[in-house]
Image (cartoon, rainbow, N blue to C red; front, side, top):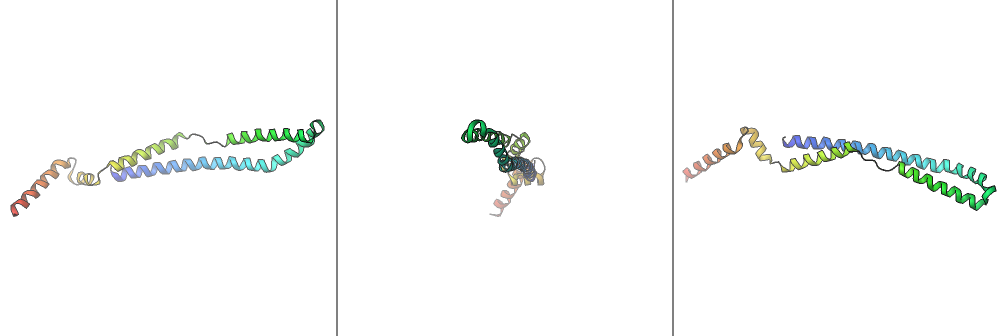
Length: 141
């Protein structure tokens, strides 16, 4: 593969990886926004209702403690729903990008240009050209 081809594939792989990661970040942000909305509105009303229901049996302090334990459990569930998930396509795109960039870094553009200009076996042809140039230079001296 030529240098520009390697860099092109690396850029496409990076684009795919970034698009996939943006989808993941967007989903996580949506879950967190839903958790925040529920936390602000729903919990407020639930607290009032729960305190009013539990207060005759357990007193105000006991009812508040029970409601607080429910809040902690709900927060744990929402935190688990928002955790990062493994995306095998994004991981494969990252591996492909790294491979293409490593291959591009290992390429020699001068050798590639000589191979393109002189055919598939540049070393013997370049040796003959270099030998002819040296012989001409030595004849002039």
